Length: 257
Image (cartoon, rainbow, N blue to C red; front, side, top):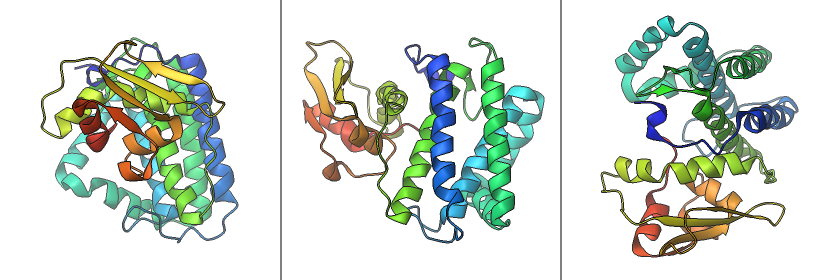
């Protein structure tokens, strides 16, 4: 399977990749101004240091997958060996490093990821967890994860996280992940088309799906992204749904397995 079967063809690399870099820079500015990374975040057991460590590990894995795909098998075997504890163990190890060391590693990894994703042909597949990926999916995937874990840090510090136009890539990933959401919930994917209309941060409307679709989701792009990354429960968003399937989707929405 390529790109988990998700269609992200409307996300253009020449726009999304600079946005990925900006997303990392914004989080960098926030955390580099903090001398203490021990504050707990909404993820149970994870401090700010854990969040940055997790991003750094994921970036390192992306570089391995693209630059030396034959070595990625060791990454897969490690993940299989430790199972569901993999993310926690890797984050624990990274968080134990001195703050300055972890920050330098994360910065270097972000630069390497951007270079690797810029160099690789869009149709060139490389190994990943459960699927072979291309840069078409990996760019918005890295942006989504940077934004979502960044949201955890913003929440931990009690700092507002201003929405930007970069959320369009995260929202597109969320829309594309509709089938994945039902699959993860072990529910059949609805056959009827969906219409998604989101209000962007500058007041513009971002829309996906046929205008006459019965199943409809509306709300702010910011809240939609919070929901599909499971950073907010549905009740704490402004999202509205028309149709039982649309409502169910918002209840189970996710952009990762």
